[in-house]
Length: 265
Image (cartoon, helix red, strand yellow):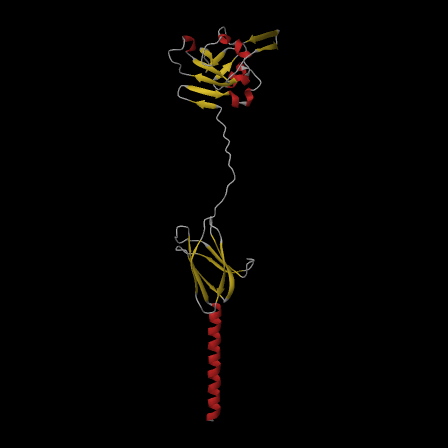
């Protein structure tokens, strides 16, 4: 009886030893710790960086992954083997390295510093368009050169497009309903408007740079400009030469008119 009991106890002991050893070995194979710390260019911990382990360099099979904590530290549990470690973060160059993990040994990769990604931008050209209407304390300036609707007409046509100005069929100009305005060309009186505004029809619109409306004229202007001053500024080097206009009007009942205006400067 003693001999069978002895062999039975020995068999049970060997079975328990083999089971414990197998569990220990399996635990060592599956619970290997990989750790490290990610820093930025200022040698400060970089939180939220993406840490991924791939099976090979093709980066097709991800084995494990997580993000670094608030101090830039990451910890991964992997089985022993060779892996590709990839660390990435926005605006930083991705970091790649081959890692060999041994069974049962904690591997510390130490401090991994990411490099700032340098981006070379192409040449940037900014095109801006000046507003057609500029407001000042005592005047408003309408830039005719930047108004497509004014092309092809005359100075009178341009005045019709200027806010708060209007012209009638006879060429009379009114500013906010008042006809007490004085018209200047390049800041000075001109023979074209000495006897009325018909002469403005001989100034092509493309020769006008801007029109300034002075709503609060000073005392140096004559009394005829009490309603406001209209200053027509011509483009630099503008020369009129010989030009003119002809117009025909008709209406009912029996309203037929024709007029011509020629100018030689």
